[in-house]
Image (cartoon, rainbow, N blue to C red; front, top):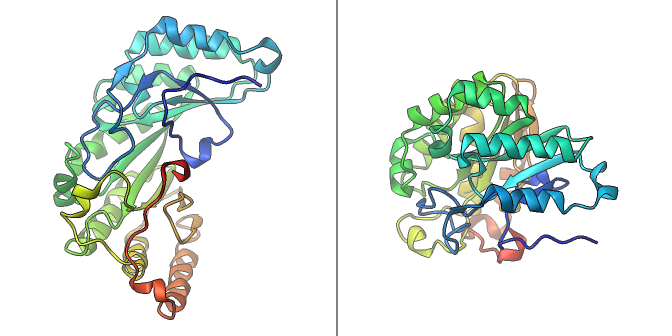
Length: 295
């Protein structure tokens, strides 16, 4: 068996579970979001092209034909300089003859460094999906978490990626705004997603992990309140051709469907969960805490 010397911890979306992962950057280029504990233990850096080239070349030839998907880590692979990223994508295609798709995380910061034409070139070299953390469509909530971008700015950046033919998987976080702005957070996020209609939209749930200072700024939602916020968000969603998922380890209600076809069924699923939850002692329980190995 072959092992990479990853700079741990290493993160990837649930949908990239079967992908071969190459860590072309370390950490996140922004790394300022107050709610996020994913990369606080790392100092951001871009790995050299020689390092990445050597790692790709180290895959034994007998395994190369088995690789169909590659995920580029860490938290903001798109920030990699354009020519270097093109070289990496070319090398991946040469090394893995069955490769169909390359994916990676993208921040608003890194999307801002690429033109539509540059993104289209990357798409032509099999960079087919970017995972984008919206967190919230509510401007006040984004200020609270120190995201560094307005909702409208992020919408235009994501539209740029879509116009280049790259699929987007957008994530938002239930409970991020706390009790004070729960309604605004749900409504604004639904409006933002409806305006973009990304190919995928995923819900995460706020939880405690290296973010104690942020949790002191908000009144965390209970399990029951998270479900109510979920319902409000689903009620306001009207995207076209968007697949919705809530299959992250932080979620306690798994949702799967597409908009607009499954809209009513998804809302009914939450309503059923609400009826059960009101009889469950966890209704008033606070947000969970997860150990690193589970996230």
